[in-house]
Length: 582
Image (cartoon, rainbow, N blue to C red):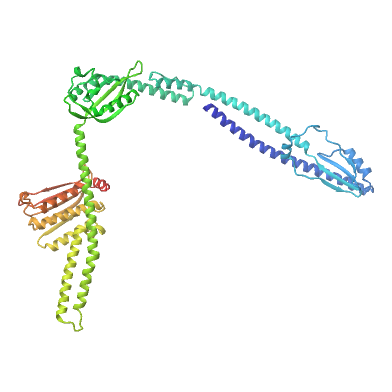
């Protein structure tokens, strides 16, 4: 359905709706007008008859309607739009008003009369010697209304026809430029980018013309640029190969010679299948099919054969070679880049990423298991030890004749139970510090240092915590805590140190973004790599894996006799991204 026809149809529907609404309003007004006219005429007729009857009574002749009233009615004839009939005392018709001569022989259609006919019944006037019946007759008023309605319908129809003809003519005149626009688009579709559209009077079509012409000029410039690029293809660092649709090579630049080992003189005229491995022959055919259909291939990672028979990974891009005269596809322009090193680096990065995710998953499961074990120790073993201690205390405090030896043994049980309780809570703190879950990193580190100093009073620990180390997330918190915990364990077991310094701070404004900086140093004997035992090695390895899992780095330095410095840098943004991969 054309736009022209749709607009005409829409206007037709609007006119029809307007006509229906207007006709309804007009008919309703006619109905009200006729009703008011008939009511007024009937009221006047009744009042006139009542006046005549009253006058006859006053003159003493009211009892004989046939003489006075009939004479009056014959003289008057019809009174407005009413039929008058006079009946005597025996209900015999004495007089009936003559029919109306106004528009005699014509009647409005029944359906129209039914819509406008007023609901007014007969009126009866009783006399001493008979009865007068007044019957309203609205047929002439309805006929007048019908004549007006026909005139309105004719005007509306004429308006409708003229409006449609005018709109159809105006649309045809206004949309005439569409033909030339379609012709221009057809020219562009066939590759004739020199096609231009004229200026149009209508601003909308003028905007289309200007946009079309700018696009055509841009395409012409692009084709000219492509021709210029073909001149420098020989100097490209990418291997550029041109062959026809049968696969015969016609161009082989210097980069292709370096990549594949073939000189241009020995391969031009040969088939492109010469450098395709047997398992890539089907891919070569599919690429040619796409080129025939004017398709393109972008950055396809594939393999090709060198002259030596060695496979090389390449990124291939291909485009159709179009004859500007006939606009036919005559071949394929193919560019290849050696991505062997890129593929190797990509595989290495993917392997490292898989290892990092695996390490992160293992650490997360390990922390979850530690949390579960700590909960079981607290809920089960802790309660049992507390119960034993309570029972022992009750026995020890009895004063009911229990022997002194029994009370002493009960006291021993209480002492041993207290020791077990302290050991269990120490193990729980080692497995999963409750302060880390409930209070945060700052309180957890302070609690760990306090517990360490209570167990090793000969080692002084200086703790320096930045003011902005909270709110970094559970993954970072547990990693920092485990690093500090492992470092303190190494200080106590291997360093022979008297002092340790711990610093945790958030560094901002770095090139790679904000990072949490953790430094633990001691004044112990330093590193002796040739005598490092397995526990230390596994501990350091665990710290390194934890930090690297959050995209951070861990450095350990220190010479023999100069102490050890452990430094961890954890980027907060990258760590949050890594933590979200779980």
